Image (cartoon, rainbow, N blue to C red; front, side):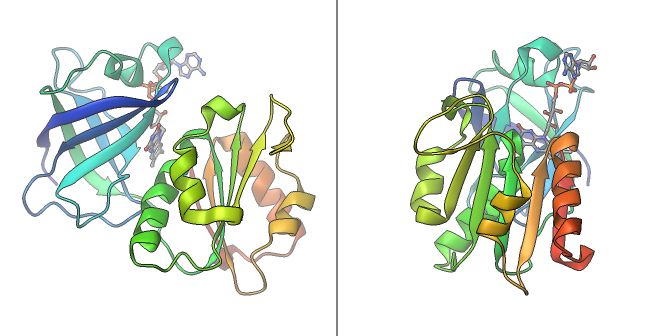
Length: 223
Ligand SMILES: Cc1cc2nc3c(=O)[nH]c(=O)nc-3n(C[C@H](O)[C@H](O)[C@H](O)COP(=O)(O)OP(=O)(O)OC[C@H]3O[C@@H](n4cnc5c(N)ncnc54)[C@H](O)[C@@H]3O)c2cc1C
């Protein structure tokens, strides 16, 4: 796909370090829930600094939404996005991604790894097909949980949070363990959808191998 320039319609914080950016959608632009695109900022010196971000909006929406965790210490594109304003343009390139919905199961996300699942869960919710899908969402602390209210509304009791650096009565504490995955388990035919940073992905793949979950039942993307 050739480059597409899209103007920012709104930009706001959804957590202390995460932005929701809504842009125009080019005519005929298509993607599947779970897919991503490369995005650069249309500012001098930043046009070539494209990074991968997932569509959080749905294919039928007449806008695009991206939910982006920012890293000021990287001095990279996400830091720059913190001072980008409405009316400025982003540059989108090809659409790609390995995550797509195959059937009911357990979604396991770490931090910004929630983004491909956001589009999938919003899509299922809009179609009234959330069913028995469950989400384990791992973060450092409660303030890091992206779109907590919306995910609670979509999933109810099937939304399980685990915090590694904060203890409270409502959430699991520590890193995701085999015990937790088995407690939430997808059942014999269920899928496991994994997205997060490489160390978490490795740990989850080890846990699922130990549970004899076949690779055909695992859908994953490393962030
Ligand atoms: C398919 C895919 C889809 C994704 N979708 C999303 C999404 O929807 N939302 C989202 O929030 N994220 C998403 N990500 C992750 C996102 O792409 C990265 O967080 C983003 O590229 C970081 O860009 P950056 O320019 O801020 O920093 P980087 O490109 O990571 O780094 C810029 C520079 O910072 C330095 N640096 C790198 N790491 C560190 C570090 N740990 N400490 C200090 N300095 C460092 C390096 O010198 C590097 O050159 C996705 C990733 C993939 C693979």
